[in-house]
Image (cartoon, rainbow, N blue to C red; front, top):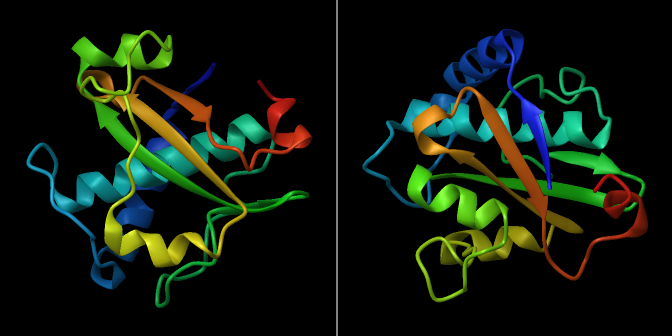
Length: 157
């Protein structure tokens, strides 16, 4: 498991991109712990962190506009990847990132909202990332999961 430090530049870009995208995005579900803008910012921080982890220039990966649904959050030689980012409460976070949690415990299993399932066909790799909810702007841990990972992606871990 690798961690990426979130710097001020990433935060600034995440806020700006969230504001640009806000009127064009349809959220598939609601959460009570963040506003829609905060959720969008979390997603951008996850995407930027994943790019940084994979050696991709995250600023070059930012879209020009958000008028349409994207075709993935990034590209590598193994295909198109999409990043799913969530926040996990501190009392569960260390268990998740250290893999000391079972599937039947809270946050022990990653789920995709049923409305997102048709979109998954566009991607070759799904990357799940998590922030500790209480200190979201300090560190992000990214973990690649699934059977579709290729050697290039795995070599970073």
